[in-house]
Image (tube, rainbow, N blue to C red; front, side, top):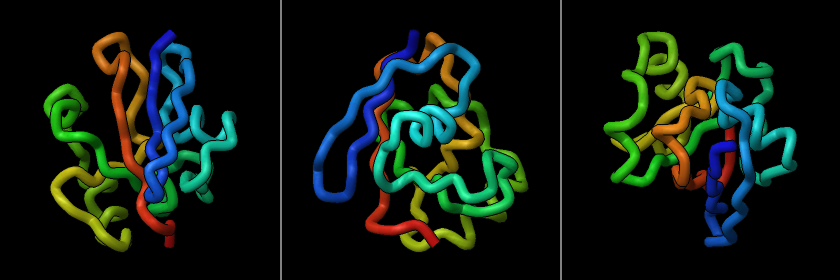
Length: 106
């Protein structure tokens, strides 16, 4: 199991254990993590699973593809740490990853 910590915009932390291969969006929705909506069900067709990945984890993620980049252009507050959790799969290399949710998803 891979540990993932979701940090709400207000600082509340919630750590969940995720099976390898499950997206961080699916894990968040299944564990009722506030701030991750996943309206499109993980199809990279919205930006409601936007997070800010803590800096030390960014280089461990798979490169962002064009569709994710386009969807992130719709996300309020996008910055260099922004990713969509539907595009991040839990892997042993990501055990302990920490992501921060924005104030809201649009």
